[in-house]
Length: 438
Image (cartoon, rainbow, N blue to C red; front, side, top):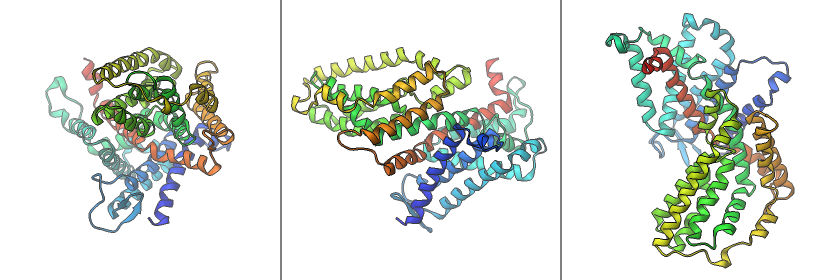
């Protein structure tokens, strides 16, 4: 892989993380620079679009023909490079021109229409690459309704909307793409993803797996119960099903297969266990932060409300796993493979401290969720560099790499919230959301 192409991707990932951290810490304000939140969101979206077209292939495999640059294990076609540059440039234009554009939107300036159209089209294509066609089809149908709805019967009709008005509204207005959904993802969710990436790199996933193995390994179907408990533990601090499977599943799935669980059942147990991690406080999936934003309640209230449902989810899963193990007469993990609980607790005593600080920050100190996440991340890095785990300490280069890698891990989240903004924008513009309530 050419070093130049890899450097571009790493630089974009680092830029995305630095943008978020700088905004959360209010560095522009401290430097006396006044910025609209929408300028920050446009910058984040631009970097994300550039990363999406460089890192994610059009059809899940290498493109055919053309001029390529290697990024990771794939080749990037010329049209991906063009889309990457176009997305970055269009969002950069919005970021720099927003103070002027926001006062001219009602006149539908040509440059605003053009840039908004490019951004909306690229967001839809990025959504197709990351999440499939379903959301795109829904949004396109709603856009057709916005343009043609005035011809429908009176009960479901909408006012006439010009195509130029639709594109400007969706691409630039604060009630659409550059709105609350993208703001929550960029400002609140990204710091928690950074924390999860740091936890994985500093041995946290190994610690929680060892802890669950020490607690559950000796019981019937112990390998599967390790997967359930380990996924719950890691889900508490990652909020990501994908990261959960990638971290815990690499250990627990082979362990379950060796114990006698069929491969498809082992994969199913790990997948549902990791999916439940998005329900586990204190760190949950992006939906929890959106709930707090739209309900206008502290995130700590949402977190407390999730405790009982999360417990019931994992209790039901635990019982089902036990029944499956009994049906297949699968015993516990051999004692020789189970680490002593005391040794695990002693070697990883420092891991729970940052998360205790996170909970205290949310519930006692009334900190904003993003500040609490960055504080917990800083403590994780400090403890990992000083104490380490299993004789391995996190180096300064490793810490930088862990933080930077979050820039690639948040692509799906930012793109899905951006396209959600398009959906919200169409509903607001047409009045369909209010009409449905009638």
